[in-house]
Image 1 (cartoon, protein in one colour):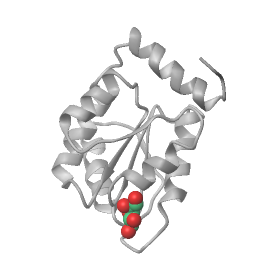
Image 2 (cartoon, rainbow, N blue to C red):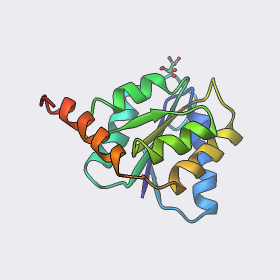
Image 3 (tube, rainbow, N blue to C red):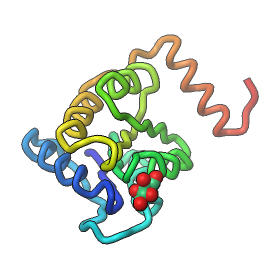
Length: 148
Ligand code: RB5
């Protein structure tokens, strides 16, 4: 299950991603928004991040104007590693090295075709583990207020 969310500026990217998920028979939940009427991105970031953190969704995808605000909001939820990606290299590396569980993209930065390509890479690239596991564990320690 993939959890999706967007604000008005990311709405059209989300719609393109939904088409991709449908074509590939990938289950998803669409937390909105559902039009280009102006809304606040943190609302949708929280719904998607909560689904991922609670294990209801394996991964999340969030879209706003830049991908930045919505990723910042998602990253406030414990256990979330949301990555803003603008190109294929970043989408691949954030899975391989950061084990990102939320992909964030910007509708004012990339086009729908690129968003679908980055989604495909994000959903089909495995985490490498090894030294990268130690590094994401250190991120979790910061989140938990622990020293290392
Ligand atoms: C909305 O205008 C815009 O600020 C928002 O979509 C996002 O880009 C914030 O980071």
